[in-house]
Every structure is written in C-alpha cells, then in structure tokens.
Length: 433
Ligand SMILES: Cc1ncc(COP(=O)(O)O)c(C=O)c1O
Image 1 (cartoon, rainbow, N blue to C red):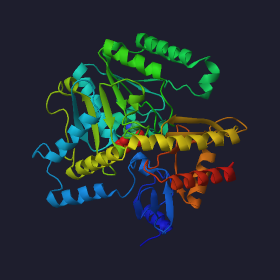
Image 2 (image 1 turned 180 degrees about the vertical axis):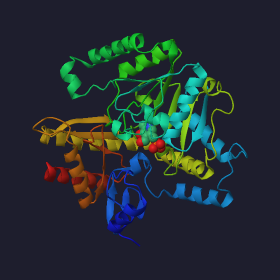
Image 3 (image 1 turned 30 degrees about the vertical axis):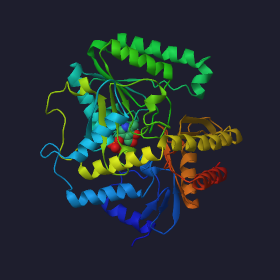
Image 4 (image 1 turned 90 degrees about the horizontal axis):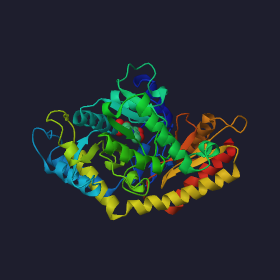
C-alpha cells in the first residue's frame, strides 16, 4: 500500500492539476471523528469530507444498509422500475422538512444537481427567467450552479455563463458593517431598500423567477444572512410570484443545530436544495418543495439515469434515522458552543490577526487578517492548516479570499477529541502568527 507522499506523487501523473487540494492529508479508514491516514497516523477530522460526515465515519447502521441493499440490486433507474427505497427517503424528507401544507421531494446525485433542478422548476413554474443570487455564494460546479457561484477563481476561463442571472450584496452584519451602521436594524433596512431599488433598476419582479441564497454561506466563509432581510425576502417573493430557494446543501442536517438553517429564521422557502450530510457519505441530493410548485412542472423536465440510486437512498435514510435517534441537533448545538467559546478566546488573545468569528451552531469559522494591513490573510490560514496536519488535525479553509478556517467536524464527536482538535488548532495558530 502507498503512503501519503506516494499517493500525491501518483496523483501528479494521472489527475489534472486543476483539481484542488484543500488539505494534503490521505485516508485509509475512519471511525467517528478519527481518520487513519495512509501512513497509519490517527488524524482528527474537522473537515468531514467538506460537510458530509455530520453523523461521523463508520456508522454501522449506514454500512449495513448499503451492504443489504447491494445484495438485492444496485441500480434499476426509478423512471424504469419503481422501488420503495426511493419512496422511503422522499417520505422521510417531506415529513422532516415540510414546506407548507403539502410537500414533495425529488432526488438528485449532488448539491449542484439539486440547484440546477430547483432553478429549472422555478423558471418552468413561473414562466419567468430572471434569477437573483448573492456575492460570496457557492452553489456548485455545473453550468447554472457555477453561474450562480460568486467567486471568480472557480469560474475564470470557463464561460460564457447562463444569462438572466443577477447578483446582490449578501446581507451579513459583520465587523466591517458594524462600523458603518449604528444597528443591525439599520443595516437590514439598508439592504431591504437596496433590494427594492434593484428591482426598479436592473430587472423587474415580473421577469424574475427565483431568488436563491445560502442562509449561512458555506464556501463564502460562513457569513450569516440578516434575519430581518430574509423575512422581508419571504414577503417580497410571495407578493411578486417569485420562488424563494434556500440552498441548504452545507447548512443542513444538524450543522447549525437544526435540520434546516431556515428554522432559525422562522421562514419557509418555496424550494430548498440538499446534499452533503443528507447521504451519510453516499452521493445524493434533493430538491424539496411545496407540492403545488413541484407538481406544476410538466413531466419530463426533471430526471436522470442515476437519480435516487438505491444504495444512496438506503444510506441516506439510515443516516437520517441515526441522526434523529441520537439527536443530531442537540449535538450540533453542543459542538457549536464549545467551538465558539474557543474561537472567542482566540480572538481576544489575537485581536489583530483574527477579525471575525461567525456562523450558527456548529457551522463556525474564524477569519484571519494581516495585522499590518488589516486585509485578508490567506497565507496565515494556509500555514495554520498545514501546521494542524503536521500535528494531527484535518481542517479546511473557506471564504472568497481563502482567509477563514471553518469547522465541519462530525457532530457526534467525543468531548476529548473535540477539545484535542481545538488545542491543536490553537497551538498551530500560535506558532504561525
Ligand atoms: C451551499 C452549497 N450548494 C451547493 C454545493 C454543491 O454541492 P456538490 O458539491 O454536491 O455538487 C455546495 C458544495 O460545497 C454547497 O456548499
């Protein structure tokens, strides 16, 4: 078996350089929040395969479900031969995440595909084409999802992108905004006003099919949308026949201490997109929506050979049941409290290097700036990530400028493992800055 260095050497020969390296770790097996790498080292996992492993690695219920299903059949295509594993999952999703009086769900392969389908549905239902998205957004790597994604480093050279997509400033009341506005209320009012002006100057609500946003931006650096603004969006969309879509791909399934981030807002979207921790590690996503919207689309518009693959369906259902039984939301809240306390301590200790601690629940990030310039310090984040790996912790960056370190650890994580991971992060930080 190859060690980590050998794997990266082999990678150079057969994998394109364009595929990013977010962390230079490797894996040969994993259990709970611990990864055993190709060198036999035990590493604490604060990345969770980019937010996929909220339930942790090696959950026996998920493994058993996959094994049992593999012996029955691996693929049939739901469009050709119906199977109950698909329905078990859609029923569970609709029960767990109701969108109004009656809810329906379609399954996809990934988060990006969920986003593609949500946009198609919104356009088909409203008969309108305009889509509104936000600065800092990340919605995936397929063509429409990439159009909606903000960061140009993901997009450069791969256009032209889809037309009729407009971008607004994301309403996060962070430290910079706190200096400009006397209160969060004023800040939110400013953005609500900007939204109204936007719809007079750029595109009419009569031409707008959907507004899509992440309530806590994942790749954008865990910035949190203003509650008042989101509540206004709900009202505005209802009044103007615009479909409100929340992208819950990274925020979902306990990460913020709730099944959905929108539960923190008291707002129900028309459609929502899901993936990552929904599948317990298997590739699967979903569009969940109000029944009248999901059913208003003509047959044939949505589909795909592999959507709702039976192995992914049973893994997802087993994972959701496991998370429900063990109260993932309480676990998310608990992890969030511990991490936030540590991050706040670090910010107090290093106020010139750490400009912000933000997020909801266990979806938390710490932002680094250069003390000389007060500008984004991606080098510091990168150096800390590398130092953490040397010391036995896997973490990854986030943010448009790559200057945040985010926590996406399993939520069922032992207290001592979580504490150990945070101490490694603190030590690494101390050595680097
Ligand atoms: C909020 C959000 N939406 C969509 C996606 C795309 O999901 P996938 O990588 O499964 O296509 C991601 C992935 O990071 C995401 O964070």
